[in-house]
Image 1 (tube, rainbow, N blue to C red):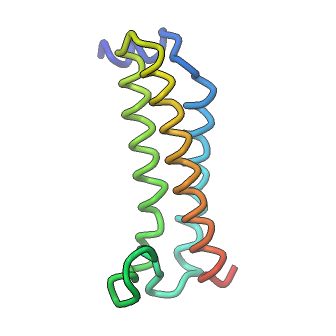
Image 2 (cartoon, one colour):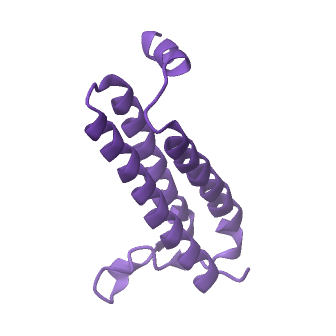
Length: 117
């Protein structure tokens, strides 16, 4: 309970960056969930892997990039509340933004290149 109280009352470092990151991740989670039915049964989620069956995954795994980025951002936000050093707080905030941007691009590319939207 003490952590929840601290989250409500404290001023987080670079709070707008964390807010933008969380909202963007949630929007892409909703977009991913809605697009599952328009995607083929298998999608190239791991397109960085060598060209083989290791690249493909079931279509419901399209939420994985946004979900992992959301969890990463949440953990960074909580860690930033606990730290005292401004440099580390800024590093966590910008790492969250970078993870959000990269996961959003990956999700967007997969949905609009493979899906029939």
